[in-house]
Length: 428
Image (cartoon, one colour):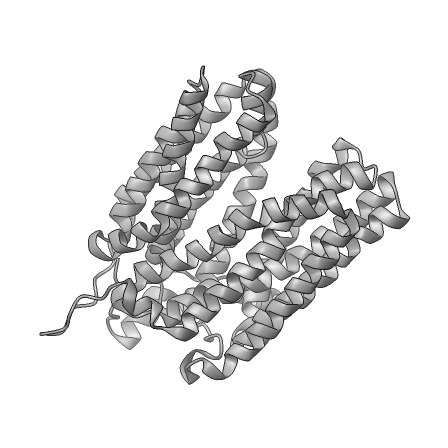
């Protein structure tokens, strides 16, 4: 048992560990405000529900527009610089919410936040890939998922206490986490070496990325997963309350269980995935999520109150296992498929596939929830299964060298590098 637990240690390079620490600070800040922003705009600032929703929608729309630009900036300027720029805009945006008095103030804060979010994910993911040896990338991205969920959970708990004192403290606290993350980034995280361009080689563009048919197909499958999986997770709360008579006091614990399972299971699942074929694992996500979504209407049709809350908690826990499978495969596969010169663009398009799913998921899901609360979950389960079929169909098109998840070298990263010699870093 002790040997197995030691094997879960991802043994990431020190620079990546420090980067993940900064990510934890960032996630705690996000956890402070995510559950309370809508309440703040409506209850504290007096904006209508429709106006508050429109304000928050600006964040997603701006992020969707900025996302592709972030890839170009990362490839030209480096991931460290662009991540610093993202943190600056996030500090301005979330800090600006504390100063909101009129609707246009909130729209401006939301737009600045959208710019930061659009720049953030491509820059951070490219930095992680560039600073991590190829065989440790699955563990590095798994750890990214762990610290993100752990931080949001911690932030949500702290946010409840701060909100009781002052909602504006939430946004000031969130802005402070971005300042701390930027300080860690500047002081302790190096800029990875760029892959040198060969003489006469032209600079790559997004046209080269879109010519990569296997990668584009992977983006489509991922967008479907985000649409029918992650985006539908947001609709559990209204379904639980309105269709299963689950009290508000149970909503938080349902999502806490989801977070706890991810924190505990992500690294073991990433470890178990090593050396195994990636696309069957990627396809199993759809099967697990379909099973999870079919548990939700069981709660609404046959249970109520505490019993329904327990059933939906089980669904959230099963869903979390699928999230861990996704974390073990999706981002490392993108990094391995990418042309090293265009890693920023590849990561930006990966983030874009998430944004597409999150943009279309809630409106369609909300409409289906209104029309048929039970039918929504059957529809989502069916789409997840269709995505699983698509994932399996992709395996033959993958290059032979990336079909299996790499097996990590269990030595200390510095020791491994001394034995194997210097490593050429990915760009940015």
